[in-house]
Length: 323
Image (cartoon, one colour):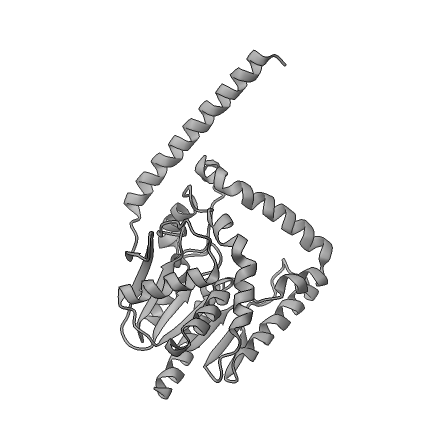
């Protein structure tokens, strides 16, 4: 292969990449105008986070999304909860409508920004925290750091310390292969998103949102920065788990742990390990209950939202009775 041929091939590759990136940028520009943030953007110290406030009353319910998931994930739960109390869903740095942050996404920094955001938007304590997946780890860290402001918690198929060890022990080979394949895909996603490849193959972030929000959800998942959380949040996930473990227990604070039903992609052995970890979360409070969602997988708040709403109301009602 001659040097001249290599140069032509390189020039052609760069030209194609440039055109793809330009197409991606033009699509994003159009979508940002079509789908402006439903809430407000608030400066939390060098970058702005998006917060969506709805409802009135106390305590204020704070929704903490899973890893890389936008506030749009709470579209079926927040409106219902807002009928009986104040609510706030928000996008962490670099997710949804929020700006990215240069600093590492360590747990204490993330929950500090969340607290700053809440105060800036007027979302007053006391708080009931609702954390999905990895957001459950952050909810626990927040509850420990601002213990006097938190009066209840709902964990929605929440991540927990030790989960990787348990799952790898129950199915080591499959987990190892899945982890390697998943890691390769995630490492490539930020570049593929910026070059419009994910848009072209319709491979961006999606969730089972109502039909009226599908286009909006797709637009968020196709943004060039939609997968920057891979390097921001995912790399810090072990630290989040350690911080959550150190947060300890929460006395007799009302706590409901919601767990997904077994899904076809999980073996009985893997699900048994996950279910055991979920039951262990009830040890965080002497006033805890564990409920298995009858019709939902990991995305309980989207697949069985009425259960999440009912659980939040139960915790809110108990918190009010104590005030």
